[in-house]
Length: 267
Image 1: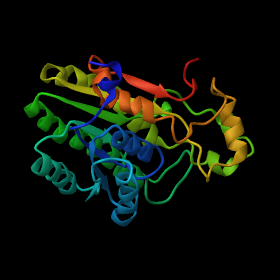
Image 2 (image 1 turned 30 degrees about the vertical axis):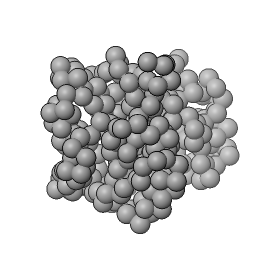
Image 3 (image 1 turned 60 degrees about the vertical axis):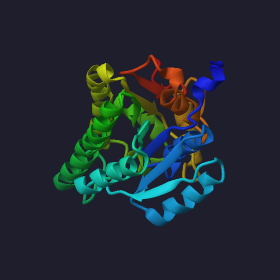
Image 4 (image 1 turned 180 degrees about the vertical axis):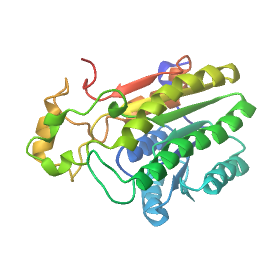
């Protein structure tokens, strides 16, 4: 086999949650560019259809949208069942989705009810998705599960990133986010030790900050000082690592969490 052929996803079926914008869209692009048949699950169906149309123009397969609500176990099951009924398999599962806490409170203190809801949905919802997809991958004796952690699941908050941007600092101490992302990283090792016997791999990507049109220049400058490459991530930086974990190029890798953070967490 030619080495580059190991990165091909032709003939593979991929399911992604949260693949409509930001890092998730970069993952969707990588999957489509590599030839996968992509199912894009999102709660924002109309917006997701616009993304799907854009993605379909890049590849040979039409991207299909599935309505999906992470707080609803029935919706999660319907999502997985739909793909299995249509394709008979799920070769790649990428979980980029998360919910944001509702209710009052920002900064260090957050509303208890909002925290309870977001922890349940982000943590238990993530586990339920993986369990259902994992059962299908066990049946087919193959598959790659890729969850999204975060550099904030690896290290604490660098307060100086918010110098000159005090409004952003309020949202930096997001308890549910730190708990969920660090939990995903630990669960990756746990899950890999179970699924490996069935030929199923489980890995996690831990990205750092992503530059967008909403990112204040002062924050970008502050943040860049704490990376070894001197900048926030751009729209392309997630594609290569995602494709590596999704493809046969990483066939002997499971149970790892890979920082994609410009060296932010290396020291």
